[in-house]
Length: 396
Image (tube, rainbow, N blue to C red):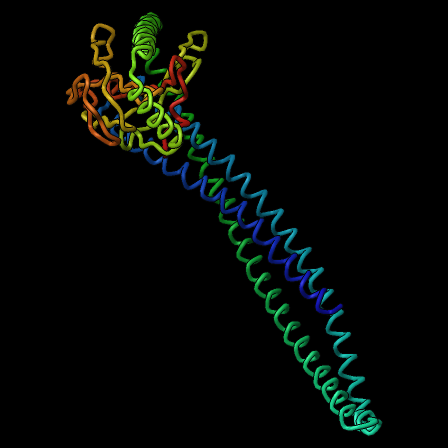
């Protein structure tokens, strides 16, 4: 019975501790990942500030910074709650463990006391002298040795559990310290968030004040984006129609490449190293005018002027076409079996139609201009005729 209690106590304490620790570790890793993303945003913001010119890109970066800080604060809140629950449960577990351990020690002390009284009465000697023969005496001696060994083992196990409880108390104290640090971190993030929100309002006022025709320009830009997306859509539809003319060998190769592409969802490198997403996938409201929306078939990744644009997976260049008239420079369409990746607003294109390209291969660069708003890549991923959210496919 004692052994069972000891084993159960160890399993409960260690098992609970592992599960709680995993939850907190996951939150901690998420916060660290978000902070790295925030650092990339702030690095690009510094570039904008150095140019001493308010731009729509700067406004988007500040907006993304605000979103990033809110996400970190939300995760910090979750971590705080998890730590509070963890500490409360730990205290309860320790209290229960100490009660059980005290009971075991009391029972063990009773065994020792009874053994001591038995020795004074000479019970052990009487027990041996009552043997019927030599074999019976050996069995009685073995029994006595077994009882002594069992008591020693129980004592060792009690000491072991006591050590576990001591270690858990130390860990609980460390988590209390971590809780205090996390709360301080949250307060710092709130202060930075307030500063970012103030900067955002200031930049909005500057842009709307300096640009009388800003809304008209935004509407014009939206029309150009929609025209560019319709052209890309038409080209992908045309590429999919060509599938009926494939040989069996081409079909087999596409099946293999499609499978490899699909298996790497969430693992692909960013096409612009150190870049950050400033416009997301799907229906998006304009950053200045809520009644103006844009249906984005991909994402826009801000980078630095002249940053290399890299292919996200092995494939074949199917189409290269100019979108200069729409303010988007050049677009490159790469086929990956049943999937396509699109790289738009590229200059210095270093590939041609029909080229086999590999993951991480440079296929061009971002524009080099004095306007920070130009330094971005529009990136899309399609499966057959269906646009997909690229953020689900890229690895941060």
